[in-house]
Amino acid sequence: MTSTQQELTVTIGGVSRTLPTVRAGGMGRVPLVEFIGDSEFTNAVAQEMVALIPEGTEVLLTVVTNALPLTHELSDRSGLPYVCARKKRRTYMQNPIIQDVPSMTLGVAETLWLDGPHAARLKGKQVTVVQDVVASGGTAQALARLVERAGGTVNGYLAAFRQGDSTLPLVALQSLPKTL
Amino acid sequence: MTSTQQELTVTIGGVSRTLPTVRAGGMGRVPLVEFIGDSEFTNAVAQEMVALIPEGTEVLLTVVTNALPLTHELSDRSGLPYVCARKKRRTYMQNPIIQDVPSMTLGVAETLWLDGPHAARLKGKQVTVVQDVVASGGTAQALARLVERAGGTVNGYLAAFRQGDSTLPLVALQSLPKTL
Image 1 (tube, chains in turn orange, cyan):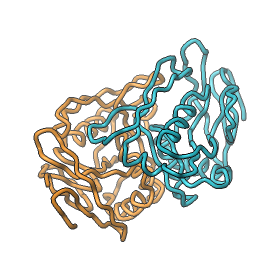
Image 2 (cartoon, one colour; image 1 turned 90 degrees about the vertical axis):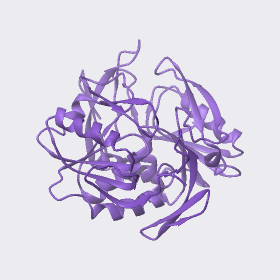
Image 3 (cartoon, chains in turn yellow, brown; image 1 turned 180 degrees about the vertical axis):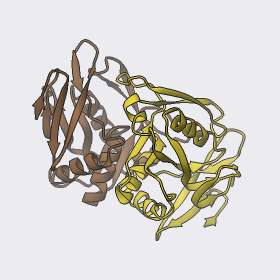
Image 4 (cartoon, helix red, strand yellow; image 1 turned 120 degrees about the vertical axis):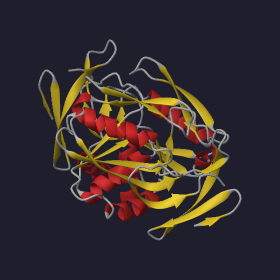
């Protein structure tokens, strides 16, 4: 990992990306990881993450939006099904599970929505929570609550990047600096 | 395609899905196509769509959320890069292009946001607009305006499903009934 004052270069599976940095609340500048619009980087990261999926995992659970193509690829490469929570209510949802998440990174409360038919796919399953970047761990904890409320069991936490010092039992490919 | 009163079964590339139907405004019930959370169906549809990408295409452009894993796969399988517009302003965006879209399907106006660095990837390029389902064509037209405003040229319109009778010069795998 190479850091200059304004940007950061990461290399995963032989693919390098120079991440721009963006201002985040009172935290200074944080590196911006974008999987959306970058299938080459997404695939390289997914390929490395497959080996880190905790043993016993039956279903992957993620949340929109940036981790969506990554989790699709993880599902494709591992053969495990995945479920994706939304951040807005969709008109077609049936008996959704609604879970608040206090997001330290953004400084605003968010709400996760899991459509009933998708929640049913977690019931009785060993579920691993998948994210692009875990900072405070607040979103991961909200996803874990969704798993429990859907009748599943949390089998582990997997992310491409860890940022900061959450106490979550998290497996991640690389650590990003909290500020640059 | 097999239709009963409340659901519809589609088969693409050997993969079948029974689509639930959902109420949509005053339009009765419409079939719900979900690529999110279904990597097997996403891959089957992407594989069939690759052959339909218009000749000369240099970049694919789509919009969140349901078409995102599909377009990721299309990019992966075709080797073409893709760009994805958002439906909300993100705090990190730099000089985004902002484009209103009147959505007939939802009955509410939406706004598309294309981050400046992503818009730059469309400049001078032949761009094909990719969507999951095209109904009125309003979102497709807004995406086309984004292409033009970013300095690119619209090379064609590609969707998994067509629904209704938009006059757009659209290539789609299958047609869905407008109501059931």
